[in-house]
Length: 321
Ligand code: RIB
Ligand code: CA
Image (tube, rainbow, N blue to C red; front, side, top):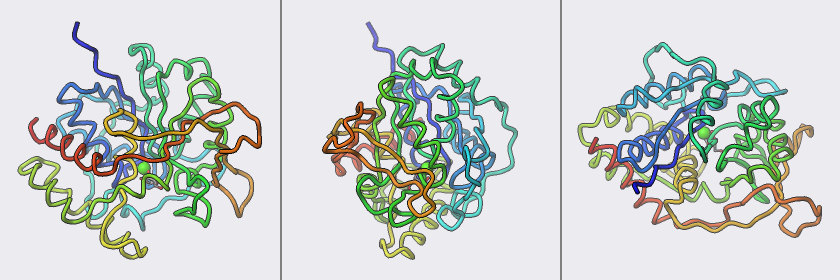
């Protein structure tokens, strides 16, 4: 019997590393390794309609015009929206700009419900603020329990932040959504959490980009990828990280799909939402001081060299489309 490829729904905020994640998922979709059933977007790196236009453009360039894209909520649950054009560029794709587009899907919750109804064990990957997931949990708590797995890129767990001394960007943008998720998901669908201390280890250098460009020779994405990544290289260099880029969201997808070896610890994660100073700070109760039910599988390590090889495999699949 032919195994059914895992059905994947990604909620993202393209965003440069989200862009590489979508390209990777497109490659695996074309190869039949997965079925990418839909993409929804959050406000985060840039506004929600722009992240949706970016996702639409990327999927169209990857010959996935039939995969639906819908913008999600346009602002965090309670705080005002803050975007980061200084990190991802004024429209979210570095020095590249998506053309204006018509988004044929506007009801992201309907997209999620239809995907859940159509796909047993649907996997959700979240690589932006957790706004949509938290809102969906609030409105459709019984439906959320139907997800086969949830994987989130977010948080800096017992680690320094990239947005404040203690907070990572996705959890800082919408701290209430992140806090609400970790309060509500246990024990329904434990979350696999890929937090900053792990994901910032996955670095694309200009040399690795050139290896990707060679693979993608002639692919439509090759025409924009250097402009997309150059902005991110410059941002990281300005941050003192060197002329390279942390590709958080692509590593998260590889882990969600089990394509590389990684280790986890079952634990309880909580997020601070009310403190102005500690907004978005995430903590894992690794020594069980709280005595609360576990709500997360915190990824503590992953095979980064395997991730680089898997990245090349995914883009080879994309290029051979
Ligand atoms: O902190 C890294 C995360 O914030 C990544 O998802 C990146 O795309 C930004 O959204
Ligand atoms: Ca992101």
